Length: 140
Image (cartoon, rainbow, N blue to C red; front, side):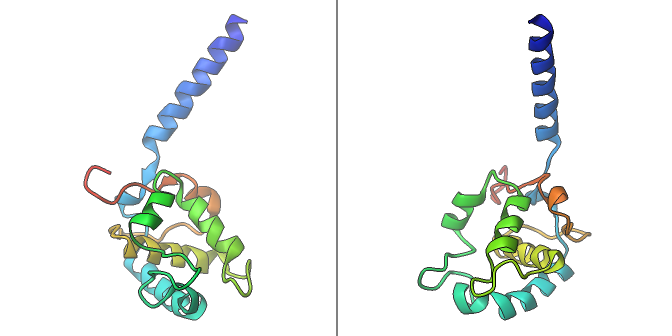
């Protein structure tokens, strides 16, 4: 019983350490070039529903602003990428490549005020899962 408790405590401590060292969107997790590629993919695949300014149209939700951030802050970039990859575009879901999905997520991050960095957001969803979407305000 004591061994099981110690194992659980050790696993919990390891999870907390991992959580503390997880990258966040405030750390420049995408490149400017990637966001530019995302802009082209957005026009082709997303703009007709989400609008030119990403503020949403009719039933398509906004991809920028307080409501969007309220739904995503605290989750991972991988969660957002998975939603985009599996449900978009609405007329042909699941057809976006991993590269296009990462580019679109980079554009969404940029549009929400997150600064770019030196490297592209990884295409690998598992690596994206290690990046937490943080509040873009200072201290977030």
